[in-house]
Image (cartoon, rainbow, N blue to C red):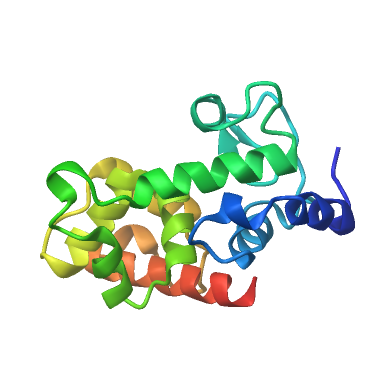
Length: 183
């Protein structure tokens, strides 16, 4: 049930500025391009997949942040849920309040929209794992490393499995900064 680029664009445009909060309106357009080739990727709307729809949102995340009268296959509803999920993921609350995840990501040259995307893909804990592996000399957890390896694009002559954590994270972030800027 692939959609046309025009349909996806129209559905994203239906989301109001108030839904975006402090995110740029380009945020969801970039998500849509990277996650589903703007709603046209094969299997994007396969309901049986763990992650599906224009923004490749999981069922659990949509149930928590989405409009329960709709589904994650509805681009407008899923876009609003994606923004709510991103806002929650980027909040500096609890024990992380003084740590400042958004500032640390900004220091790495990652703008707020890309921060939202990375937390969408890696989860909040995975994103913090990325930052600490670069900034604090920490090690990636096995789950984060696996998610990175599952999402990084191949490069001729590079076996990402053999890279150390810091090098792997730098390659991953470099690729997604590039994808984000081109989306």
